[in-house]
Length: 387
Image (cartoon, rainbow, N blue to C red; front, side, top):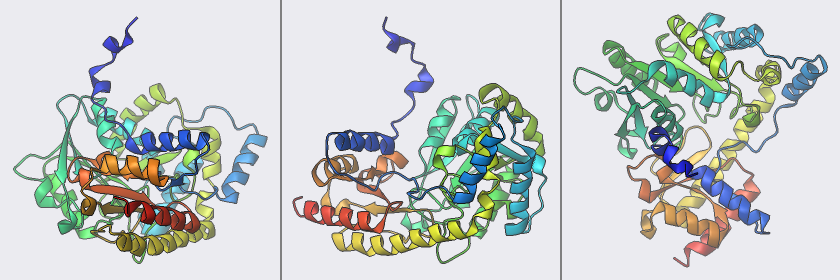
């Protein structure tokens, strides 16, 4: 039977997730005995903090392995509400905190409630690729807004809100993937006010908010309670495999989101939730990781410039550098493919993040050790001389 004829039109709209494609190619090469320097994947190379692991062992020893409430255990929802009170001075009801199966699970729930055929999701280009692919599953239209170094890769209120109507939904990552840019608070406030006038929903993905350099990135929750904030434990707390996130939503969305969650996920992972109760107590480990990322950024940035890459803006957060390869006149997919095969260094092409200027950009991840970054730069230096 030819199952290809049954593949849904929604699935056909999805674009490849190149970072995973090149990660899988790299691992195939490693299985054949090659040594690859990984600078493609955005995954912390640190172990999960000890208090979190200890909490998981304790939960397991007490047989806390059953389904929880569909929106998460009350203790964790309360703890996250306390976190915003302590860090932002903002009081929110724990009822508005929804625990999710990773931030991807949060987007799936949000989009299922807020998007449908004919709805419009507005995104920056470049931007995180999974937003548009999840939206495609609901037949939503995607409007890409080109951003460049001239605006620090920020989407401006003028670009977003042309005319009298806006998109049904607009989402940004802050700090941004792939550029590492941190939105200015006045820009976020301006966007929120304009979208509110048009009846549009504003979502801010803050998964990298705890990884910021030389400045403080306040949560959008402090700007307006109309903004939906998505966050999680994967990046800041080095808990990618625990698959746990959260979002803070308006009260009127709680029940619709719960109905979808009950049917799609039943509940978030139980052990992960009890472990995450200790995540906010791991301040020392989190700060040590942040400082290490900053040291890596400070090493890699001048190295890439020395090698001939053009860096339009200095990344202020996350653990990525978005670098121009226009000097070599090679399409970014070909550049990344050759870098992997010939230099044994894995990178991500600009096409993962949109189409605007995608042929001439690649993303470097410095979520790996300084020694590996040095080795990767040495390999690239030798290889680039052959181009």
